[in-house]
Image 1 (cartoon, rainbow, N blue to C red):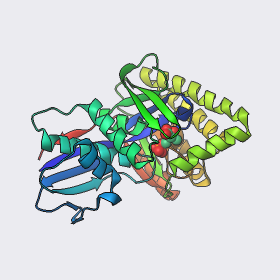
Image 2: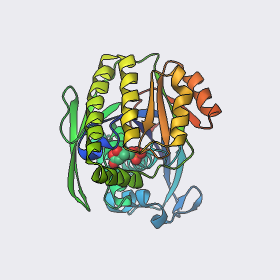
Image 3: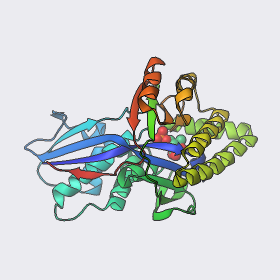
Image 4: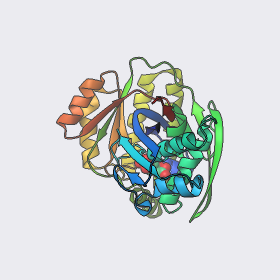
Length: 324
Ligand code: PMV
């Protein structure tokens, strides 16, 4: 029996602008997905017969990546993430499945987190018709603070490059890591609106808006600049600066039409107790994030305003095998 864990992620800066080549900054969060696999006499998932076509991430990893031909597997999944909420739950599922199967088939070989990030990205791309940025899978595999960009970003450590053939042509990203200072008294609190966040639809909406109103590219470029200054503040441990950058980033995200009344409601509810707050992920629902020194107070405000809170430190550890 093998159990692996992979964390979810929170985008601090740069969602949507990253689609246009600007940098995005994401941190891994404490909650994630745990997958347990054990050899058995029949294939099962959560105690039910395993139907590969209903679980494209898991079946891609078993069949296409590992070309697994051993005994049938009993697979159990425990998730601590809201799904379809912009927290990277499918990336965490893919990474924990990849890590568990690696350990089951090659117990003597240590888990290489870059290879795992590539496995997870391949599973995401396969399940999303060839369109997936490596942000979620790289952040979940490596843990910490990850910067994804069209170009290498100064002041970060380059980890690997990633290329994907998409229906729109070949796309490449540089994946870097930013060192996080000791952040003893700082938390993020995610607030789920309860509305599923349709990433593809939101990305398409931004592209249509820019076609109609080309001046909206100014907002995309501004998000890129805010991301760079937010990252600089984060690296220096200037959390007030990070909070201000989050607020400015949210204003620009609102300009490109990806906020919604439910996100705005949660953001206003936490403002008095936050250093900064913004939507995180695709928007149109999904989650907002608050940066705060008072996580319980913020979580209460989110609940009172009708959202579901999740408290986390910034940049917890990446994917790993758990002791039995
Ligand atoms: O909500 P998520 O995790 O799917 O984040 C989407 C981030 C976008 O920038 C909107 C899309 C992307 O591919 O980077």
